[in-house]
Image (cartoon, rainbow, N blue to C red; front, side, top):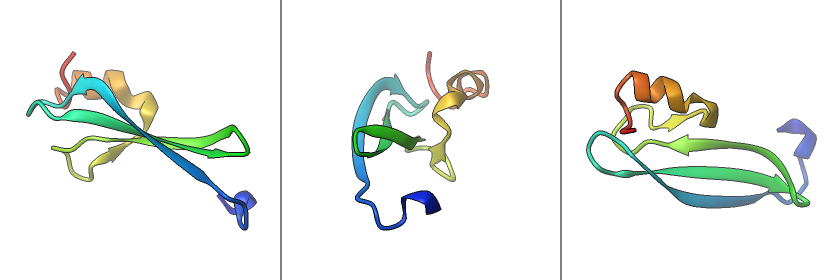
Length: 68
């Protein structure tokens, strides 16, 4: 993120259709600079530490952290 120091970063939050094992919907946070996506992460309400890499969906399903 150092390369974006001093730039305005926009954060977009989305509620996903997937749910955790307790029925809470997952969220995705996307970070953007000048209409270019520079990163993002997921939020899993019932899990500690609570955030996850958005590419980890299959792993989280296999570990029974989210419903299919």
